[in-house]
Length: 261
Image (cartoon, rainbow, N blue to C red; front, side, top):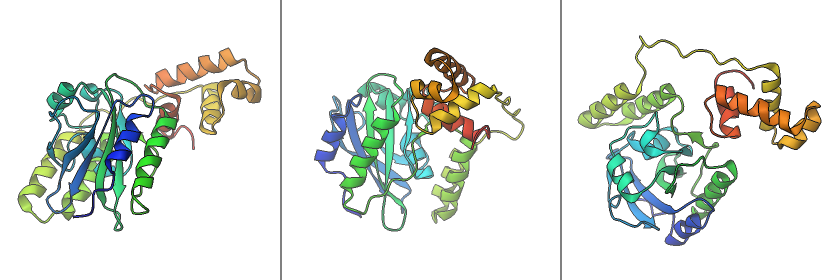
């Protein structure tokens, strides 16, 4: 088994980030198709200690399947993940959780490192980037974290496809069957009606495009000839239409819907 990448000092550093109350890590066993929570910093109980899960279960399973950071604003209410561990998560008092994958030299996920808050919140991109940087540096060059964080409830079809690919690689027929049962529970039914198309106004798209370029509201107003208040109004409207809690999530979902490059 690969050495445990995040030492306790890294988990402590994660808990010092603004908004993170608890940090913990899981070791992934690719042969068994499982991962186990085995290191903690800031936990008040032992409810999550030694919890073992199949790949594909919970937020950690989604992180392993997609091989990229993922987060949920409120674990118990999140869509797109399985909920076998709601009781343990609630017992520890956790709400918002971020999961970051650590990849080994072959590109497989060797570990998952988590940062969690005891309140429902949307982790900002700056905090996510700092967490990813801490975890990546802890790997001593072996760890690799890819892409930006995606909301934990985004696109069940993407999750189902990733899990199906993992199932195809598992030799144990019983484990492969169980994972495919998980896929069947996550994947939308072919009979499901397609989600209604989101329509954004030209100005809403203009503002989101500027957000994607990294500009703040005041600078966006200067570039588009709008007041800062008007920029906020367009942004708030676009976020509502895209069912997004943050401006970064709105950009992510607009791109996913093909509304902007």
